[in-house]
Length: 330
Ligand code: ADP
Ligand code: TRP
Image 1: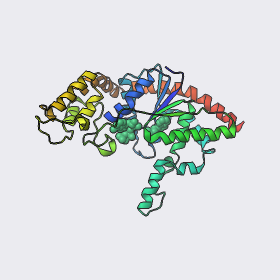
Image 2 (image 1 turned 120 degrees about the vertical axis):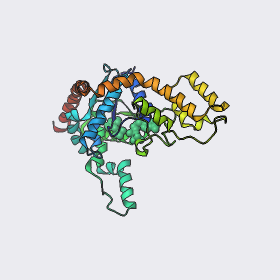
Image 3 (image 1 turned 90 degrees about the vertical axis):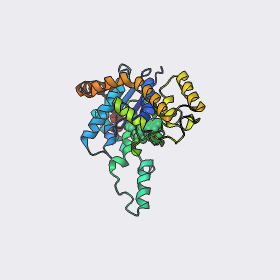
Image 4 (image 1 turned 90 degrees about the horizontal axis):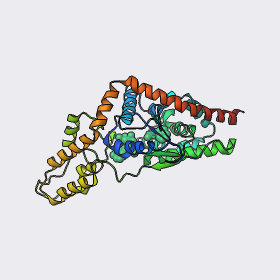
């Protein structure tokens, strides 16, 4: 337990998969259960790409239900929807005035769009809305609003946390010490979770296994994992096997060693290895899946938890906004 404040946002852009679970959600819950943590569903950040409100709503519920079902301790953690916090709109607007346009030009996701458009020979800003362009300002507002010290994110988000530090610095230089300097913490699970086709599990590759897929779907997906064509009797390499990589994140040390041994020795077909993997994942997730299903059919209970969270988050946010207004407007 530290007395530092941890904060992170999760964008509701898809149904969480085992890669998100192992790489982000599980470690986040472990961290949140020991520290004061703000976790929000970043629905405002989804708006620059997602135009269907019912998709945003569904994925927001899925993420919230998942965090609760996986045992997030709601005494330490404040779980809420980003859009429920009015000061977030205020702070991003205030921060616009100390953020150089050139900083936004350097943001990876904006630059990627510009490069794509340039290669296609079309206007550099084609398809770029201001939500995308100012995304890092909204994210800086998220981070600075709650006096966050530590921001756990995936490697792709590190630049955004660095921008939040830059923006805090510009603000403090202009108006005096107002914001703390947040630190990015990049998740360091060993390796990337592979998907059904062996590439990184990602919704962009359509190779995912949803965390709380019904048992029959979980089994079907696992049985569809692509393997090489080694025969049952042949020795197999656990370290290049998607089955084994996934198993490592769910099984105990001795179970992992057992399966490794079976791979290396030969005599086990991939079909049997997949059955072992299915049984393991299913048994680890079964109890949480029941809770998750219950919550997804009682979304009023999720709403209640999110609005309690919003009230707690707002109490902190309003103090920050008062400080910012005083600094900027006197
Ligand atoms: P996707 O690639 O499906 O769009 P996101 O980019 O939304 O996933 O991922 C959110 C977080 O989940 C990332 O910051 C990362 O920490 C984690 N994550 C996603 N996919 C994987 C994976 N295959 N292996 C490990 N971690 C992952
Ligand atoms: N941009 C982050 C992502 O795409 C989500 C996010 C929004 C976030 N606001 C944040 C993460 C603040 C950390 C802190 O994953």
